[in-house]
Amino acid sequence: MIIEEKILVAYGATRHIYKKDAVIFEQGDQPRFYFELINGEVKICSLSEEGKEFIQRIFSAGRCFGEPPLFGEFGYPGSAIALNDVKVWQLPKAGFYQLINDHPKIHFEITRQIANRLHYKAMMAQEISHEAPRHRIMRLLNYLKHDIYEKTEKFNYQVELTRQQIADLTGLRVETAIRAIKKLEKEGEVRIDKRKIWV
Image (cartoon, rainbow, N blue to C red; front, side, top):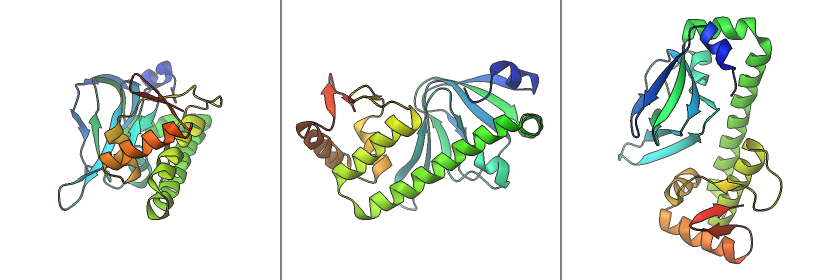
C-alpha cells in the first residue's frame, strides 16, 4: 500500500466496496477523494466521439488512482470502472491535503507514482506511433514486470491482463495482439501456460 491503513483511517478514510463494472467516478467529474485499492483491479478509460473505449491504465491492489486531478483541480480525464469486485479506501480531499502536508515522505511517494505514470504514457505514445505490435506488447509487459512489480528473473511475472486489455493498452486490435503474443511465444520472449502469459 502507498499509505498505511492506520494513517488513512486517522485522516478520515473509509472503506467502500464496488461490484464488477461499477463506476467509481466518471470522466469529467470533479475530484472529491483520494482512492487506494485494497483488492481487485480498476481501469481508467475514456470514450471517443465514436463511442470506442480507450483504456488509459489498469490499477491493481495496493495502488492509488485518480490523484492527479486532486492536485490540478481539474475534472477526471477518464472514468474509473471496477474490473472485478473491489475494495477501495476513499479519503476526502481535505483529509488528503492535510495528510500529505503532515507526511512529506508520503507526498513524495505519490509524486513518484505520478511521475512513473507520465513516463509510461510518454513511452507508450511513442510505441503506438512507430513500433510493430510485438515490440509494443513487449514494452508494455516489461514495463509492468520491471517498473511496477520490480521482478527481474525470466518468466517469473504472470501477466494478469486479458488479451483484450493488452490490445487496448497498446492501441491494437485484439486479433493483432493475439497473433503477436503467439509470435512472441515462438521467439521465446514470453511463455504461455494455461492461457496465462508469463514474462
